[in-house]
Amino acid sequence: MFEQAKEMYASIGVDVENALEVMASTSISLHCWQGDDVRGFEAGATELGSGLAVTGNYPGRARTIDELRQDLELVLGLLPGTHRLNLHAIYGDFGGKSVERDAIEVGHFQSWIDWCKAEGIGMDFNPSCFSHPKADDGLTLSHPDKGIREFWVRHCQASRRIGAAAGEQLGSACVTNVWIPDGMKDLPADRMSYRQRLEQSLDAVFAQSLNKAHNIDAVESKLFGIGSESFVVGSHEFYLGYAAKNQTALCLDAGHFHPTEGIADKISSVLMYVPHLLLHVSRGVRWDSDHVVLFDDATQAIMQELVRCDALGNTHIGLDFFDASINRIAAWAIGTRAAQKSLLLALLEPRAQLLEAEAERDYTRRLSLLEMSKALPWSSVWEEFCRRNEVPGELTLLEKVKTYESKVLSAR
Image 1 (cartoon, one colour):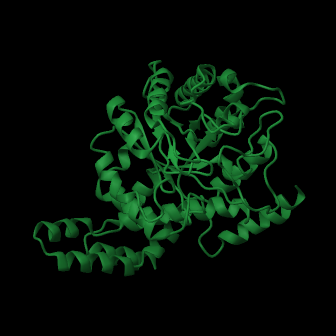
Image 2: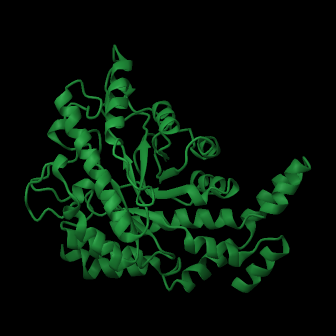
Image 3: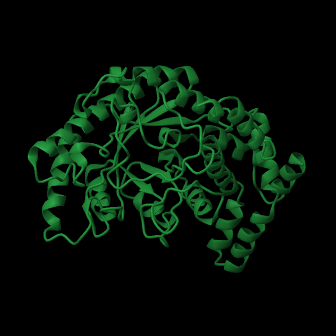
């Protein structure tokens, strides 16, 4: 079936082997927080807060670092290609000791770096500006209290140093992404002062020059959240301006915009003005609910745009969802593979013919080619990609997950 598919694609000018090479070299950053419902491993960790929520109580949640790594190792074995780990600061190896967030150091994450090295993968990092007493009122880097602002500045500065150390040790730049929950439930009287303080805080966070071969700074916007329905300090417009001015990476999270607003169309515009793009591929249902990614129109549109813009080289693809209502391993694997399948479908488009049709203003042919490519046997190419990487195909994926559930997760 694969050989037949390969011949069919070749007949319209698509090099399947080249597509598979690109797939093999495109990593997706796996978000650690899917495995334990965003609880982390701080001593005395409290319930998730700052407008974040995880629903469901499916058995088998990872309770320790060892359990989380065990789960991640299984997931990596279910995914074709080589991927990355995306780690939040609350997941440090603190040894049961209480460590304030502005006091975290590389040593608290060295075992994670060593684990990534053993797995042959890169690592990305995030300061955790949520679920903390100093974030209880919904403000961190934009807080009117200078002491609280400076606490979170120190936390983000420490996170950058940890990211840079990980990038240097692993030989692959770490994307350190800053997201904060700052906002208000009702209308503010003075939006400007909050944004001015956020800008000053970010300037202090990024003041230390770090080797860009080791660390890539990113900033992430949001439309609204629970408790910040009327005003979010770090809006898309704010961070787009900040990233363009300071030449940081910009993070576009698929769930952080209006429910009917896709991020695919933003990609080409953003990359004209910022050096790197970070994607958080997610799925919002009515709001930023972080549902498991599907092989759907929205995900396909994102990957199509990356390929059509030739943007894979300066785009970092990560996932951001957490679902505790289903098997967490299955959620990781299904969501990541959906993103990969969407990318493969994009790489198998007859790009040369599409560009030719568009240049000739033959929009009828362009539409026909786009629709025709959807009907071609891309799934045979996907199965071959899985086979070459010695991971389960679609028909055997759930069997592997259920076996792990019965042997490991059920005992937790």
